[in-house]
Image (cartoon, rainbow, N blue to C red):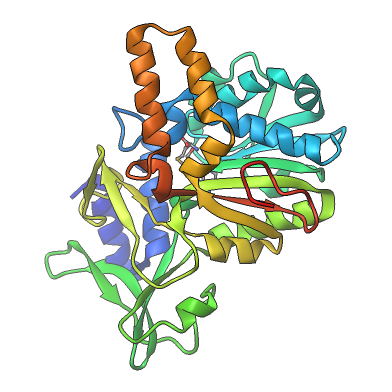
Length: 357
Ligand code: SAH
């Protein structure tokens, strides 16, 4: 058991079992031992690798996507370019470099990074040295203006709750203790009615089904939607997830690039859940575009041409690496289909690039 695991066991003994959301929040953001607070969880040395860390092409194309949306919406003179959960700052650094092609957007946009981890904020500061950017804790702290927002592998890191449909009603899956004081799964007594945040498909799941809810994610897309409806703009969320909404367990732990038991090493494994794109889109109250497969989006945004341009100036080894990255990001048997992109705009706004009108 990890030190955080021993602390959680004490907490459970004195205060009772934890919801999956409470457990996830502790494992990811405990001030001393959380995965995101303790060290840099990204990349080869960490637990997982994300698309912007695979290739500069990803952040470049997403940055230009935001710029194209800004142009299509009449080039508002003042707006916010926001990234949720910027990790190492790689995506935003690549996006801003590519957006040198559209200097008027860079002039109009205030760049805001929304990041919960102080350690990662420091990494982002280094990646974006020389750029004018600012950090915020949440969208609520930002001025009212059109938003152009990017979020890669952000929503999968938000805390979820799990519920099992029993013949007596919904029971919450919780983290408790066994006789040896090790963490183990347990179930609450049946709850009255449906738990909060269940889509109609999840409400209608058969007895024996396990469902997940992410009300934190829905609160955030709700605020994104309010801003889109009020001021305009566009948002793009790329993640692994499902659409339409459906029952099923997707909660998983990844430690040093391998899946592991989510209860076995709290604070030493990244915890995520697949994103319910339908639930996020519905909660936004905005117009949803897609989701489309990441591979299809990147192809539509011109990743092949970008790879060719980069290869023209590359050594043979670099050119081979660019081809490998291109395949990893787009091939259906790699990230191309597992990852999906959902775009949100106000009703009546032009369909964003890469999304069918
Ligand atoms: N987008 C990056 C990092 C993905 S990891 C990439 O693609 O490489 C998830 C990121 O979201 C981390 O930066 C993590 O610290 C941040 N994060 C998770 N929950 C958050 C929250 N509630 N508020 C702000 N940032 C959060």
